[in-house]
Amino acid sequence: MRAGGVQYPFKIRIDRSALATIFDHVGAPFERIGLLMGWFDGDALWITSAIRGDSQWNGDPKYYSALSPEFLAKVADAILSGRIPGRIVGWYHSHVGQGVFMSDIDLQTHLRLAQFSPYVVSMVIDSKTFEYAIFSLSPNGSLVEVRPESIEIV
Ligand SMILES: [Zn+2]
Image (cartoon, rainbow, N blue to C red; front, top):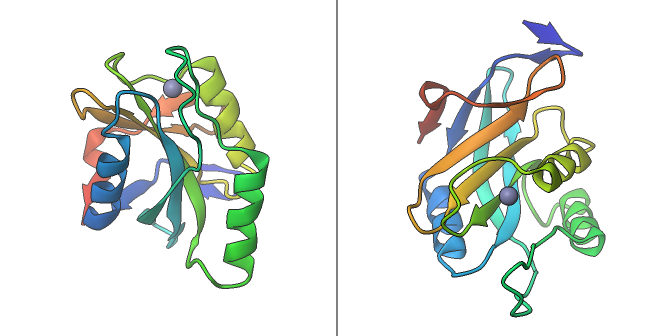
């Protein structure tokens, strides 16, 4: 199916070392957040690296980490100047023991990142169980979980 030039559904290939970076980063008793970097090759979305967000926990148990506009601008600038390879293809964040799902705030973050690529994905990791899921927007604009068989770790 095609929607606005986006081939859907698409496969996702995650580099093993990117996944290790993410799991290492989210191994904390509070939410953590970061960016997924890579590119789309016409068939699959490659996630080749991850950039840790710069948020610091403030001790509030209801703390919600966010990708600040300053952080996004810094990364976008580093991409333009060639200091970071690839482009922003999504983001990841952890839920501490609440399971993997997309909250309303998560959806807003997803939509904000869609300015960088039509193939933006959201990865949610439960940092207690290390269960994870990847979500993307379907052609009708609703958020769907990418089927596990479409995700390949390379
Ligand atoms: Zn969330």
